[in-house]
Image: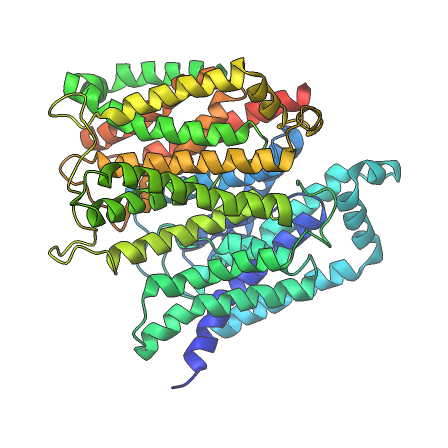
Length: 272
Length: 318
């Protein structure tokens, strides 16, 4: 028995979750709960396939991610909706809208995909840009202060609305790329509810990683490794129930949240 | 109120454009009874979610709890098929099953600081896969090719012969009246409601806020489990738990009902009727036209966002 199929599946499933988690991390650091990740990924996956896949699909996925998170920004910061509720609402809307469109006109069975190497390169580029941004003390400080106390940030002359908007746009772009890569590095078509809770796993990875970039990446890859177990078992002919194996990442996510008690390390502005 | 006016206008437009759809949905007594059958679990689930919302907590795991309650009654009902207690044991254990899930989520929230929405969403996936595994595996009906549990030997007492409207509707209405009375007319109910804004009042009244929130979520989740059990126990000729029961959407619809009703329990009934109407009309619309059934989910999601925006906008203004 070789572990290469498992590692390959972990890479293919892990990159989208990892990108979504890192995008969500930026938004959470600005003090807004990133519950919209599931809907952002789903919309981006749908748009990526509908726009023909390949690099075009990836770019369109990125912009669709920004569109979703911009809606979230408007709901939370302009309409004063609780961030958690707005995220859940957008997720429900994304699921309903993509399912509705899929039923009316099904997606093409196969569009040009991206190789795993391309996916790794795109993810590496995203992470490099993100690390460079976070390494900038001016940007980092503005983000951290806004996340800790928006009021104090305003006293220091920081435009918190702008910081939050930029954090939302960054999160949307990165999670959008992650969502687009999900079908583009995989089956090359869109399936209803194809993210299947991976956005929530990304969120669990953020909490488990205690808002630390390295730990968040490690946690999301860990969840993806568990997620890939089912694919690995089916390719290896191992006789286990698919539903039980599919349950593993969610169970691990829940246990991870329990182990990492009392949201230590999290921005103080996050809704409690 | 704006939501109800908006939906009334949308309904009027639909009536003008597609009179056949409205006729299919409400044009006969049987069609109306079908509507009441849809409304029954929604009323009970909405009640559960609303009770939890009044304490400032969001019970988002309703979809999973609803499925868990349904599976529990299917397993217990078929296991105790030879005793007259099967029905009541099934309903009680479905309530207990829901309560256990609620206890876990609220305990994590109050004692471990895990946000109930994140743990609830993960719990939804866990319960979805677990119920599917159990209905498809250990408790699958061996005599059937379709993945579902064995048939229940009983059904809930029917209110009208030939239709699925059963005692669950009466139970839901009684529970709603009781709930409105407790939360609006009793001192304890008012203290519990004050938890949505501050722990202080409840604390001064001698009710420990954490334990009160846990208690309310346990009862709320139990009620949603009961809704699932009633749904399985009243499924007319089926009376089985199908492995794809999870996707019925009642749990999320319950959340929309809870949000639409806002802080007032009085609005629970109109909210339930509105969502049931939406679900029923989307079914009729998909039958009469080529539109997929998902149009109901789409409208529901939009309603959710509008209701949430209005509710929390008002809160922030006050």
